[in-house]
Length: 301
Image (cartoon, rainbow, N blue to C red; front, side, top):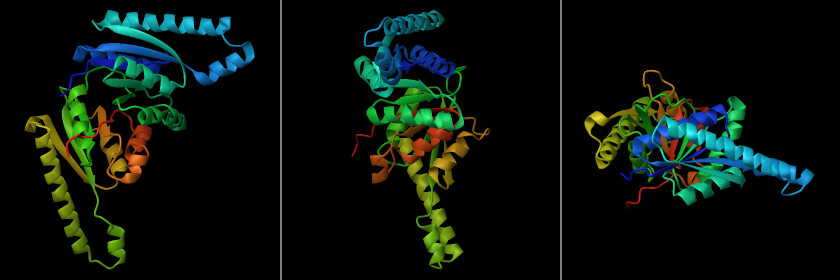
């Protein structure tokens, strides 16, 4: 596993963004990593301001100065809470593009953002920020929903045995080295509805279902072995059904007690290589705990 050497956290000075900064600082202390705090003045409001007052106005400069002072105060608070070297970055422009540029400059091993709002507004914000950022960057992205009251203890890792799966496990171990991993896979009987429509008897479909579960179990244990997980480090979670729905159900199950979901950026299909994976989008929109998205494929053949 590659160690995290630098983490970038975005903040708009809201309470949810503060939770993201606190989590990023906790992870930086845990890994002995550096931390960059980034605030982006969004291009839309700045364009309106320049339209009315002209470029380089005193008010625009005051906004930048105020943001820098607030960011430096936040950095001082983070540093006072623990020995984390903190850099501050002020940028102006489209938020996802500026965050990607700052992460590239710092060579950040992890980007951290807060999930803001609730319901429809939460989906709107995630759709315009986190999902756009995932399309722009090859760096892992952590979307923080919960206060960073403690390190991650139980991590639900979504696996579909695509080239993203091995890297998702590696990233989970890197970000949450002390956590127990719950390796999740959802299987379905291929074309079950069509089989029923074609008159295939239920006993045959049941046999197919048992076979699919057995194959999934074998592949899951094989992947755990390939990732060098010890028996006490993980547990299987193999369920039948549509992956995005079942993943959110498991994430929200109190009996599981998971405080982080880790998944790959895309899935098996060509369609999900063209768009942000449907499972990722669903969990980002509907989940309740923090979500860590791996953006790197397994390099092995």
